Length: 424
Length: 203
Image (cartoon, rainbow over all chains, first blue to last red; front, side, top):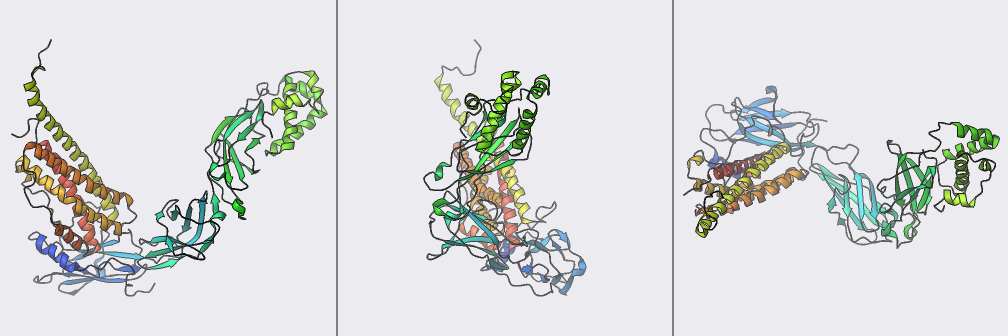
């Protein structure tokens, strides 16, 4: 960046009506005898500059002091003494300083440039604001919770830090009429976000944009146009219950209630379920749980605690064609699968006996079981057959020969009801 | 049955003990308040210097101790004064602090708009100083001392402070440091002066 004069500040500090008078008033009234406190002035005061620019600043001793009062003065910037070769005496009472290739300010209140007397006492100070103009905000995204409000967040710009206090203002208006409005509740969902709590219209598009302003300039994002109905999200499904499926050791039943806030509106809810083993951080996700309020998880480990969560997407609300926005996950609900009755046997006598008795039919059923375990999804037809087979297997493992003879087609109704307390 | 000082059946003895006990309790309460606010004032000062940047937080940083219009630091001979006079000066100073703390808060809202905790502490400090000043005046009233012996802080004092801060950002930072320092000094002074009111109280 070429060296040059500092840029004039954009919206800089308010112009003081009588700054020097005020300072002198204090000096005349308050300076203790024998001290040189605040008996100099730095110019320019509180300049604003671009990163990489240069600055010449002077410290002028006030009053009529004999000799060369500026001799022996020195500068510090943010508490660090500056090399003497950056300074030179302009005249007997003025010490100049040249700073080149300035870095961004270390704090938002400005870098502290101080002129010191030879004994180290402070004669005067000035604050430098070195930074960058704001970049164009981008990536605005918004959502409405139950069609009652609107929250938006955005990215400040690819460069990130401007080193200067930068004000972001979210603006919105109805596309076809109305005046510009300014969002008031900032940081509702992160540092670059704003919340509009009320008075929003449906079935008509809004235009939304973000304006960024600091001492060095301003920038405006592209305009986002949206209808509130296209960005609706809702609360997590309440009353999530997870329970065992009879004695089935590798299944759990999940039930929930559709979000009450949207119960009066026509929409096709989608749900997702995720679950994990108690001591794991890896979630498994069950997709495509369409418009149901229950589901059965299969292929689980016996005797294991699982945590389960559910979330809802109210897509298609009032005929919206958009995909909808997923709610937050419900609070985790835990349940455990029954312990395996055959686990203690360690593949012992009853299981071996069963294998010997069933032969090729059992091998085929085991293959079917293996295939089902890989696909732990809610499939009504598969699970019905699977449950029938499982119930039959459990009875067979207790050593009843008459059940083994019916391996391929277990007698259904009673066993199914026992194994299937939930309706699928 | 053990002897006790002051028979419980003697109403004359009860009425003479009760007001003094009430006053002592009031003094101890106010001293506890002053102790708590001294701690808050120290925290405020630490928070303040953090947001101004170096050299404000560095050891040995010594900006000019310019007097703030309308409020001085405790004088060197303050501790030699009679206790009621000390408390009176404490109350006056604490009464002068809230508008100055408000000026500092407004300045910091422009300089450090994201420093939410600092701004809240400055707002709280103004209320705390007002409360402690009122508590000291109540103690002075209970002692029978004249609560206010000097002129009230002039509004012009606050304007002068604001003008001096408008002289530049560095001056504004120094003003805030000075005001926060004065709050700490006077809260600590009030705690010590209340402690000088022993269990017997001044005559």
